[in-house]
Length: 198
Image 1 (cartoon, rainbow, N blue to C red):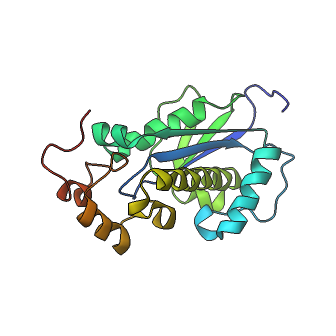
Image 2: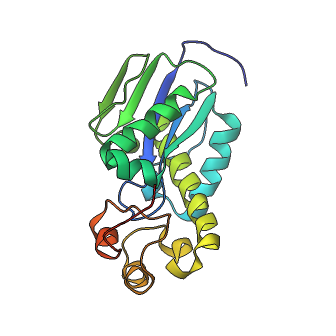
């Protein structure tokens, strides 16, 4: 990867604000002027196969990329909004080259040492943010598949921690695991008053 200090637009996006378990994951990407891939779009608009394909192309050919996340414990300590900004900041600061500007999907930007702005639906309109969306989603899905090996009774491989009927029924039957977000009401209601042991 060629080092280009202070150049390029970095896109930042997250995956996993809504699930009841697992981390919130953010990615930062600087595509660069020579990036070419026609199949790039917001991760939610791509099939799983297309996301994996795009993820591979981005990791191989983008100028720079980085992943950051905030754990379920951090989500419980700070709330999901603050934890999301923490994950985004970690992703942006993890870039191996400095961006000239950072564009974040949504309404809020984390505190960063570079000029930055938030833009609603940037993941649909800005390729570098779409790329970040793909990396964050693929990384988080893989993370949840690994969690499924530790806690197979919850079906994380299937629903990735989102509050599906299967997940809610497992919560009711087994109670929450250490991977769950105890500050989220369905989890809180499924556990004893003591909650997680810090």
